[in-house]
Image 1 (cartoon, rainbow, N blue to C red):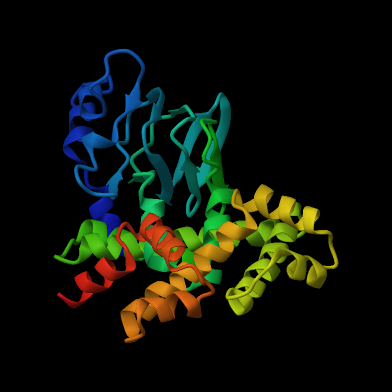
Image 2: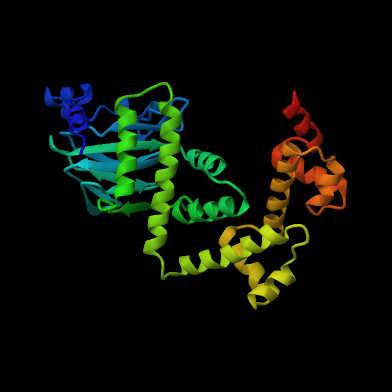
Length: 324
């Protein structure tokens, strides 16, 4: 443990000093503008950012509440006791807890030596991860699958608990995040996003290891084969050939792809073709007609429509903007 960082985190915040001075009720104005349900609002903390880190206030119980963002708790020192959906859970030093927007929890007052760090994360941050930390079709598609399995996009209260005190890599990432929080520089906001992205991926990998013998692992293996086939054969990929390679019926393969990825086989092939087309626009002098044919589209008008739907501009406008 970094002794200097620990000393800084042990210092009382203004909110903690007010509590110690006798203010024994949570000042809800710090957390929400709502007057009915206690829903902590991201606008109170995030402003225009996607992620923000703050120390959890000690010395006071937090009543039952939810958030309009994704919250992550990290126990830097001591313990953290709470009830999640009415069930007690005690986090120990090094543990990580992630809660989605739809679950309620209530928190027992932390003692002086209990240092808990709260990460306030806008749901849009996970789109940022997909856009910036995935390189290539297989990686981006697999990452999308893993994130969907980690954060189910439904209005159901869920949480993820990671007892990762014995993971040196994860603890090192947490140390880096806290250093950026306590000693910010001009580049700290950017560094926080990328460090947090790496942390989320490490936690997804940790979850995948824990589920290694489960259906999740079978899905992972199946999708790997699907994505690898599309990666190589995207120009003329077809479901019948893939099904034959997997020794399954067309219907079964199609149904599995749809159930796991929420996309059709055709959608996945188009995703790969358009990614290649975009890269050819960026890095070659091929004509748009030649690019369309190169990625498997004989109908240039159809290619134009798909490209514009994906990237917001026609291939011609997209390329012109790049060269301005």
